[in-house]
Amino acid sequence: MKKIFTTLSLSSLMFFGAFAQNTDNNQILKRKCGTPTYKEVEQAEAYEKWVQEAIRKDNQFANGKKTSTVYTIPVVFHIIHTGQAVGTSMNISQAQVNSQITVLNNDFRKLNTDFSTHVTQPGLASLAADVEINFCAAKVAPSGTVMAEPGIDRILCSSKGWTNPPHTMSYIEGTIKPNSSWDPTKYLNIWIVYMNDGTLGYAQFPTVPSASTPTIGDMAGAGGAANRDGVVFDYRYIGTTGTATAPYNKGRTAVHEIGHWLGLWHIWGDDGTSCSGTDYVTDTPNQADENYTCPTTNGAVRTDACTTTSPGVNYQNYMDYSDDKCMVMFTAGQKARMQACMQYCARRTSLATSTVCSVVSVEENMSNVNMEVYPNPTNGELYVDITTLDVQDFTISVVNTLGQTVKEVKQVQSNGGKIKIDLSDKNTGVYFVTVKSKSGSKVKRIVLQ
Ligand SMILES: [Zn+2]
Image (tube, rainbow, N blue to C red; front, side, top):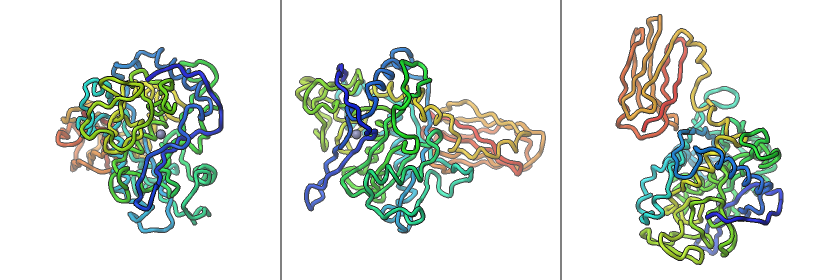
């Protein structure tokens, strides 16, 4: 839905909140955002002018055109706890973190298998897009050390002198974030906290640098502080296992909030029930208000006051308020905005070249070894070509974005050569191919299609 929006009031609010309200003792939860609107984000109007210009100027962002850029965003989960055993209560397990990363990689690549169950209307199905953004668990901490658990930074509250949870949003913004954030030009910071005020999660809106191209004026100061950049979730609404709580136990709160973090607004335009508001996306159907639960059980057409005919409103969109199980798609127009942000937004652009998901710090030790990996992207058959003057033992490992080794080949007293690796039985996505010897290691990133 795209309409011209003319009013703007500035405030210092730079985040979105997704709330769940406990309406009675039966713990009936209703997804709701507290401060989600265009009107409440500082310099939102300037951001809109910029992003629309970026999309218009650059053909690769035009709706309906496939972009050639596949981004990978390194993530770190700062898990704030009070001493519970790992995997208990707010000190969530590695498996729960991994389950969320898997959901992000499925949903942002349109690989989620529940899409066809909930989007049976051809007029909506044709809008759905592969956003071409992957996520990987960071393996290297800012200090340069290899992390004990990929993608995880566990923080005991008392070790930082913080009060025990539940934490308020202002405490998280003022104390927790600035004292635990990792370089946001290299990591997407994700905080896992205990809020207990009905908040599911919230995100900080992106920033456009004044020197960016295409530029339409000075955007300096837009967006929030660098040390508060990222997304926050209550520990009960993250991932698909462990403490994840229905109906928000399919990892879609994180997909929704990262959508905000990449510059998306709510699909209904935050305009009450009127049809005049907008999400500034050209291909999303106009929508009166947010949807809750799963409005239809079989993907049937759902109309409202703003879209009265088939294919109806896109209640299956990640930027609506539906339950996790029927939130299943982004549109091409939403993709164009997120791709533009990845290319130009401050602290987003640099994530694409961040190397923290692979252990590359010893690469210089392997200057006597050359490695080529091809074809890339591959459909499953991969060749690793190692050139070296020294006869030595090599281990070639293929590691997924969760840091798990999915294939390992050893070469004893070898001087390299071309080694074939079959990945045809692995899931599509991003992998890291590492060759290690006693003299060091080298890493290449590949995409399995
Ligand atoms: Zn939201």
